[in-house]
Length: 171
Image (cartoon, rainbow, N blue to C red; front, side):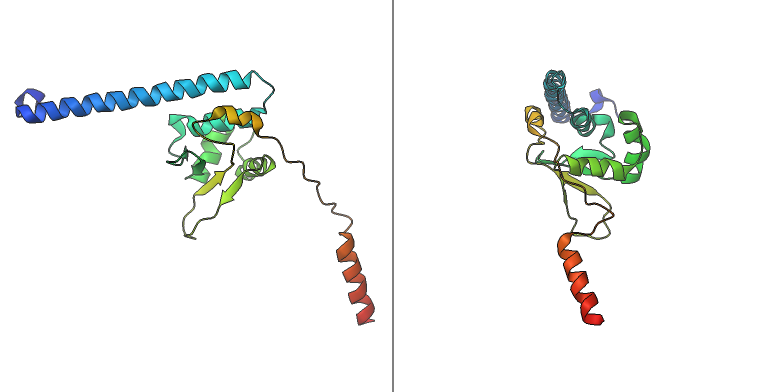
């Protein structure tokens, strides 16, 4: 291995500069993460839904980046490895490891899935206009969507009328 002292002077300066830049970038990322965590703590003390707080924590945590992370713009997040995410991350934050339940919960809060152009790509991308990496205070504006559940017993009225007409026509 080469020792730092054995390198040419201009190489030493470049390495030193790169190390300083890396430390500065790491420091800036930590500062931003600490600021987000503080904002999240402030928000969490309000009556915001725990699901949203946990979701922001999961997406923002560095130790989950292999499975789930913010997109470069910070306006959506990607679950790059759904199986590992379900097996290792979900049970840490929730009482289940079912990715379908997690996605159903996302839909309940108005998150939408971005469709993949490549059908072979397994990753899942979700977005919400008020779920932004650099604006955790917007989380307070996200509310559950109250969608009436369709009754399994009674078909919708329009369908019943069409069925009745079709039945009459066939008799």
